[in-house]
Image: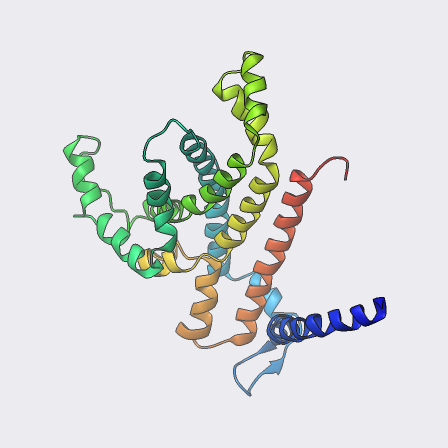
Length: 289
């Protein structure tokens, strides 16, 4: 009986294995083989690890890597903390119009990437609304060149991706908070715990698996950042906002096509994601494991 069930189960599993192999593992293997070659199309020549050696002297790659890591170490913690705070506020049952606020904050996540990038570019233009507002309240004396200044352009990219993805993490945290038994908070209140103490000693520890999940997701998403830099700053000025994904795109479709070198850079992203995910899992895992 068990053998029959196992055979029937395999009939459902085999199609998934075939599809995953065909559309995930095979392309990954082919990309790695391509990373050991140079050229494009049918004119690929085996060059070994030369593409990986080239990374060590490629100034554009180094700048793209620096920008990507900079976005990661600044934006991900800000977004995570902001999403936690917003979730805690919107989880208050006494708050009126909670559904409206939740929908409003989550709405940017379903907004077109190109559309919102163009809007951000317009709002933060030298003569845009943001500069006009900041000058009106006397916060600045002259317009900030958000798009053409290296530092302010990076700030703009961080603001854009934080605005878009904070609501995404907020949904996970809200779901986690609503699954926590109210009796735990009531017991803490009897012991004299205030709101912050309850959040620190009850909410955060119980949300630990969800925080770990969203942090890894956000890390992967930031390392693959592409749309915002292309549509808002186009990687400028002077590649000061370019990311690794945009550099790969440029190597394939903007510069003289070099599939092998682009594949090598893509594997750098894979390596970084694997290492950071492993570190996060170890840092966020249970000590008893």
